Image 1 (cartoon, rainbow, N blue to C red):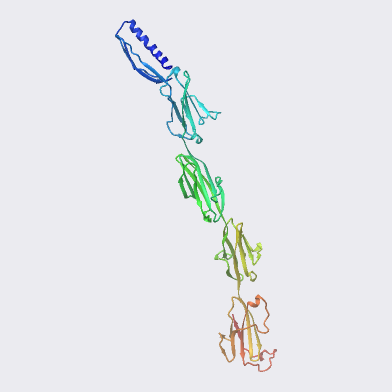
Image 2: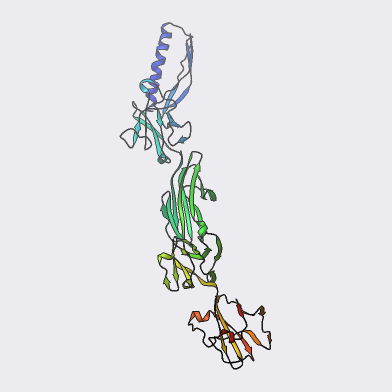
Length: 474
């Protein structure tokens, strides 16, 4: 009743002048009609409709006016969704408030209000302009309404919902399930060994949630819409050399997009070394593997190019036997140049490929072929007759033929006068050769049976020698 009495006194102060004026004018039919009961919260204004008539014979009308405790709170109106970086107008209202001296005061506060020089803003208008930022999402904004005469304050607090494009895109890499991922900057280089487990993670902060995409050189490998900061995972269970390249993660929603990339390098030791054979004109003859025999004609040019797959690139070198070849043999890494193949070049040559992860090699057996070189013949008198032998050095082994006059002596044919041709051991008086030269000599012999000089051979008189022309055919 403490608040009801002042309100009732105010109502009587309004009604008594009317009634007093009616009684002074002695109009008994004067009457006033108003609501019997009106309820309004304190400090708020109310409109009370009424009607009256003159005169009124008897009686008065009494309206009870009750003011209850103020429990109503302000309304905060946000006319459109809040978008980061876009200006929005917010309105705070209190239905039923009075104007004039009894009008309330409005104030705002919240971390999203940033006047110059302040981190926490307070505004004193029922309407404010707000440009939210991503970090304002989920923060609170309060509108406070104060009635100065009554010393009463009411307020309402809302939680801001701010939409924003993807931001803070992070790409990380881990090589095992129990290892913390390593964050990677945009354009960074990641090295992994062949066969390793590799896991790529991509996450972004956005509202609404962004669609995340992993791609390799433009080829989509994984895509999903994730909630919150949950990452999109791309697993490479056993990294292969063909997995190397630029991996990009893209985060996109209706407000924008963001992307980040990394370069994956797959490292492995040298694999499958091969040798390409060509001549001086660079015409490729063939590609050889380990243990191949390579025949070449003496005097020809030879160019051997060694190549292998490896990462990082292997260092290539050539060796003959166990000795590294001098730089004069190589015009470039992995290239062996022989302008004129000679006998001393024969033997095993090896290309070594080496990087920090391992070493591989490929060996070739170089054999030098050359045209026959005829040695001899040698003829000597024997007990059975005349024996002749000849030899030839060549590779591959030559075929030796004897010709007697115009007749070619083939195979093992014989007649009364000769036997041959046939392979033979070095005859007496033949030049002596050792080592490799001896192995390259090939002999043939021819025997004439029953032939005797008629008299001792006069070396000074060639006419005393009976002979037939012997031609050795290679």
